[in-house]
Image (tube, rainbow, N blue to C red):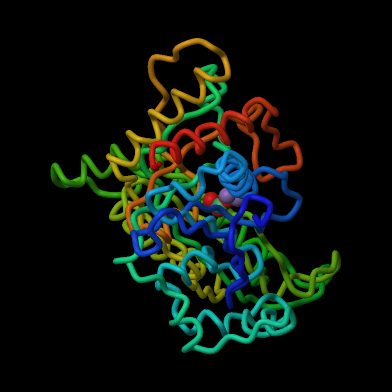
Length: 393
Ligand code: GLV
Ligand code: MN
Ligand code: MN
């Protein structure tokens, strides 16, 4: 960031900032960002690509002495924790900036009981509730937020184009389910007398899969409103159990407790809530039938977000100009996509208008070491941000 001529600092949530003042420091600022953290066993592009393309574009303007000519301040923010892998709650960095991170988030524990506040302290960052409040940006001082991100899906690859524009981002809920049964000896307790928390969890997980594959088989459809909700759900609802553990986790012990996560996403917020309501009712029925207890906790909630039309059309022009610069050929139109993945733009939408560019990836693969973006497509992302910034000159 410093090589790109930016003034830098790290804030009390661990976000890294780099700012160019532009011609007039009191103008509303454009924020460009993405996240520095990633998932377990990840690739190198998810998050980092958006930060690198923004810094690279600003570096070009710095070298050509145009940074000072920008009509508004531009700030790159590398957000500290978007994925929510450690504490389950996502967007810790961007939610702090947009003012939607509750003070209670500082006391969230990871699996070994270490809180967000402890982790920051171990990294020489002291944060209090007041400190968190002070991180919130004044919406009056911000013009908008832009993010470039790896697509994490196959659409751009099949369209044969490096860049696309994001129309909106699906809403998401994360749940933690704890099933408690009766721990016992694997060799001695007859099958009919078990309260096996793992077998119960297996039935709950298969229920989730059926519900999300065929929501229309589970929800009643009375009116027009329900029918349009169902159409939107059928096209976008996705549900995942990505993490499961049991106690005491030994091959000759009937598990006394099994815990698993549920990630539910859909474009329709009411539909998502209807699924969660139906799911919890049916889960409790299964647990009652199996004589195990079942506790469902909500760990994260974010409604769907629509990208700003004006920003999206500016980003589309920038993407088209970047594609022309690279191939020399005019691309008539850029694909417009919905995002099933969550992004910092969701949290930033509480502060300001947001717009996003997607970058093609190989085979649509992400959240995997096989994640790949070609050098030319990384270049396209940087050039698109540069073209967008040039429109701000
Ligand atoms: C972030 O990558 C998410 O969508 O979970
Ligand atoms: Mn991710
Ligand atoms: Mn990401």
